[in-house]
Length: 321
Ligand code: HEM
Image (cartoon, rainbow, N blue to C red; front, side, top):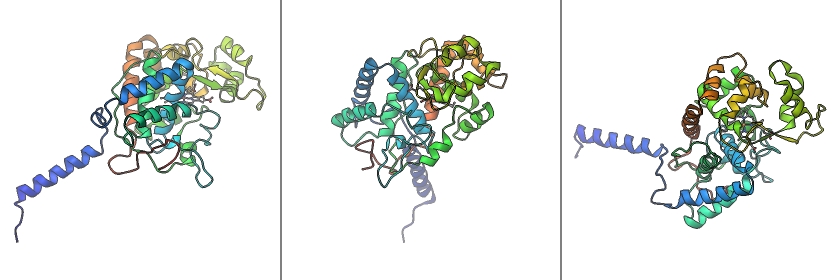
């Protein structure tokens, strides 16, 4: 019986290992041949959505965070509930709050027209988040691609994995560490709150009770549109960054240094603890925030992707094929 020499078997083994590991990686040129106009197609749709409503950039960025933190960046947050399927949209952090799904539909339709059945919804979201930040004046990074879409979603995982705004520093650090992100990543990524809005229900307790680490003039301003009684005005909105809520800059960190974080979890990052120095550094150096933010977004985008033959390329981001 013919047998491979040991060296050939070893070569084949190593080749298999190399191919095997490559297929599990994301790469920046994943759709280079299969969808050459992908980036321009996504960007023009994101651009027109942001031109209609600047907040949409914030909403798309947040969707990517809520996707990645729940069983990895697999497009699960985009699945609609059906009579026989419970998705993540009604989980506490998303219900009445996560938005931008129609824009994701528009991007996906445009991408499907350009290259049908090729690009996952998870990747569409990763590119849309990157473009949103850039369009609003933040850094640009080379987004890694090759994720595939989940065929399931988990409301319980969404409730357990996305930290609520009542979270203290240690718990924030451990939630991020649970998905492989450092406390430096936590601070950089929280800089996302330099754009977008929050509902009264998420900052009421802070503006009425946290007098020790909240600027009193901001407290008064926010109280004027967020009644103290729970159940009234719950959905009234306020900017997370009081100065420039549609510019991706480092004002969020300047606010924290001045005790002007809107959410309890925001001010936790500058409240005498281990992350104070990083907050102060970003408040003084917009360039280091921009580069650390871009690096942290790439790391967040690497959380547990489905690759190779796992999952599917959904045709419609709202339902499994
Ligand atoms: C560190 C833990 C975090 C907590 C506790 C948190 C919590 C929140 C809350 C409560 C809101 C307001 C939602 C509402 O009132 O409807 C919000 C908004 C937002 N979050 Fe976070 N977040 C965190 C981290 C992040 C990260 C890592 C990102 C992105 C990488 C992000 C991006 C955003 C954006 C852009 C908005 C505004 C969305 C809009 O205007 O539609 N957040 N966040």
